[in-house]
Structures are given as C-alpha cells and as structure tokens.
Amino acid sequence: MKKLNSAKKEIIKEAGKSFHRSLKKGTKSKGTEDLSKQRLTNHGIPEKLMEELMNKSREFFELPEEEKKEFGDGDQGPFAPIRELAFEFTSKIKGVVRNLLEGIAESLGLESNSIIESTGFDSGAFQVFAVNFYPPCPQPHLAQGLPPHSDQGFMTLVMQNGIGGLQVKHDGKWVNVNPLPNSFVVVIGDQVEVLSNGRYESALHRAILNNTVTRMTLVVAHGPALDKEIGAAPEILEKEKPVFRRYKYQDYFHFQQKTRFADKSSLEEVRLRVDEQ
Ligand SMILES: O=C(O)CCC(=O)C(=O)O
Ligand SMILES: [Fe+2]
Image 1 (cartoon, rainbow, N blue to C red):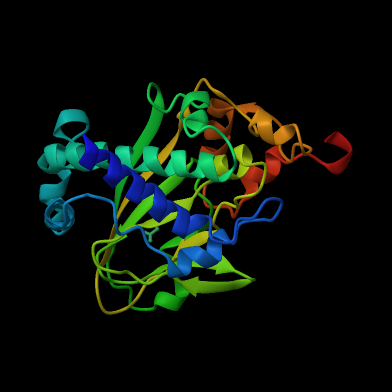
Image 2: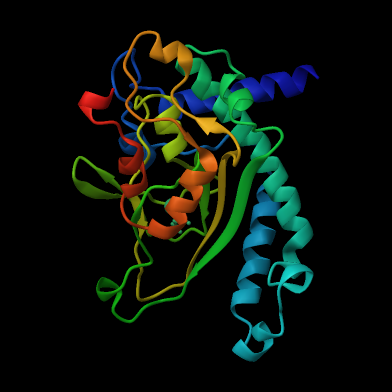
C-alpha cells in the first residue's frame, strides 16, 4: 500500500512539474509552452504493453484492404485483435489521469478530489481510445494529418511511435512536440480550461505529415460524465468572475462533434462576454 501511495505522489508531482510550473495565483498557465518541453514519464505503464499495442495496431493497418474489410463492427471490429491489450492499457491510463486531475485540483487550491467528484469521473466519465496511422505522404506540405484543434475533454494522453509530427501553437508559432521514449504528451483539453476559469488553457495542436516514414500515435481522451453540469469551481468563483457559462457536458460534446478540428471554436461558444459575467 505504501508503495502505491508513493507512486501516486510521484505521478502527481510529475503533473505538477508538467503543468503548474508557471501557474501562480491569478496568472495564466503556460500550458502550451510546457507541452513542447515536458513529458509524462513516471506513469507506471509497462513499456512492453505500449510497444505491443503499437506493433499489433500497425499489423492491422498494414493488412491488405480486402482483409481489413473483413473486420466488421462491435466484437468483430478492427479492435478485436487488440481488445485485451487495449483494455489493460486504457484502464491503467485512467488511473494516471485520475492522479493528474487530483494534481490539477490541488494546484488550483481545491480539494484534491473535487474535479473527480463534480464531473463523475469514477462513475460515468468517458474515455476514448484511438490509434492514428499516418502513412508517408508524397507532398506533406499540401496535406494535413489533423487540422488545428483543441481536445474537448479534460486531457488526452498521446504516445508517438518515435516519429514526430505533433505540434502545439505557442506564442503564435507552431512548435514541434518531439517524441521521447516511453513517455506521454499530456494535452490539456477544454474542460480543464473551463473548470479552472481559464487559468489553464487548452492546447491548440495539430498533426503534420512527412514523406518518408509511417507515423503512429496511441491517443486516449478523457472527459466528464455526459449528464454533468460543467463550470468553474465554486471556490474559484468566490474570488473572480466566471469566464465561461455553465453547460451540460453532453451539449458541449455534441456541439464539438459537429465542429471538430476547428481551432478552439467550441470553447468560444461558451465564453461569456464581459457584459454577461
Ligand atoms: O496524432 C497526433 O499526434 C495527435 C492526435 C490528436 O491530436 C487527436 O487525436 O486528437
Ligand atoms: Fe487532439
């Protein structure tokens, strides 16, 4: 038990280093700057598990089209060959994200479990696992892997297969987030921006292509339960005006599905004008 606790503390400390470095009361986080330099390394997820997941997913993507088509939906869907590995991976990641959310709550001066409780993280929170496959592109400057966007949930953990392509916008410029072995990039999403009343900013990011090698990423996104109402923490609003209006996460989720990959447009929809605050 003791060991588990200290491992947990380490992860929170890591989160602290990653996100809270420049977070002082009343100032904005430099989340995107940190993202280009910081990685989550002390995550406790076996390297072998991630390697296996990456290799098996690659095998699937590289099957001839005809064979790929044989996979249907549901139990026979493309995830069938990696179902168990994916389950183990995503459950472990959920534990890491839980710790990160505790770390974030603490950094905001809230009870460590406050975000977890108010957003239904332990009961109905959503988690989406995706494997992105970007084959070499003959003219990479004419195409995009993924257009600029922010992720709509709390945070997304991204693991790259050793090939760079993820970029974040920082000070008006696109900055490369180079892959480092056995580490995750933690991409802060819109819900953390809202819950923190704008102290954290969700990262505007995109994926670019190259013309030589195949790039893959394992991506796990997390968000509140759909029926929860989301807004800045009440303790924060005792001292400052709300920056965003409250909403049911379900509404945000559906809206964002329609406007996916359109910069941070969903967040702008819930931002209050000065005369509404
Ligand atoms: O593949 C990447 O590097 C980024 C993926 C991403 O941003 C996403 O899936 O939302
Ligand atoms: Fe993303």
